Length: 88
Image (cartoon, rainbow, N blue to C red; front, side, top):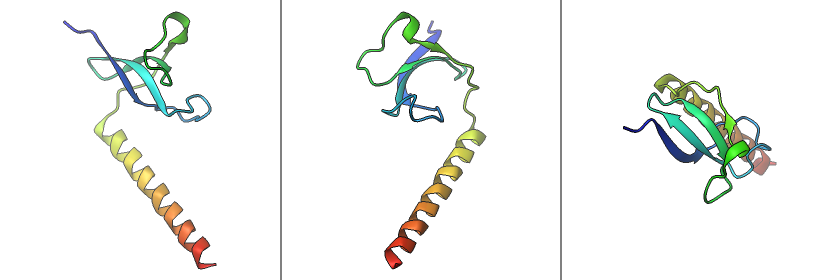
């Protein structure tokens, strides 16, 4: 019986200086909750105090949809600014 899953995934933090490579190692429960994280700039994750405890809630379909909408709005804004800069 598996209690946790270890995964390397896109970092979910808001601060790019914490995880410059954009990836992190995460231990995930059966319910989808992230429990521990480790910097993702390694081929094999470290041990001991290099892992940090997390208090993240499991992702839901609603939170994924909201994040996708936010990304789409940001991309549209960037495209609009680029078109405006080219027009000058």
